Image (cartoon, rainbow, N blue to C red):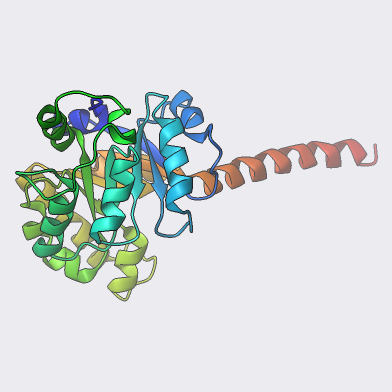
Length: 264
């Protein structure tokens, strides 16, 4: 299987910065992100409405670049995890992970025996349609696949130590909007209860050797999360980055146009 440089960087204590995709399903979007310097791209299937077929094409085109293609699945069900992996996803993000049993189900669904129970299908997209030793492929896939458990409920925070202790989970990822909703403090990211929850997750990651991850809605927010100790950062999402850049450009151009029209 292909080496997963994001997994290796984070396992060594480094930082990886990527982005998320919700709207732009162009075949070139993964390569565009790669040329921009993104270490990874997470294609969202939880909120985007994208089909397996759409995501399969996005993964395939992204695998032509250096960026690591990952998929956020809608929920913890075997077929929702196995299909993106067979299509070539090199990592999975699973939302609303709330306890150890769920984390173990994720690992069991995503790993081949003896570490899990992922169904065998080879010479497919995930192994670039090549032949070769199946046992070696299984071992390599288990080593290179990157698993992200999203901690985004009060219950997930309560059980974060047990989740972090599960072998095979590589990254715990704060879903900050959903977490504040679950805690009854919607979008209050400076609330002491939210900050304590973040610290609790960071401590669990440090104790169990997991990479802490989060989305940063801006450069400033991303840098602030880095300073707090997060090492996997998704810088925004396609639609918001585009909207912000477009808004800024149009505002600048209209400002000049208004100055030119102003009475002398």
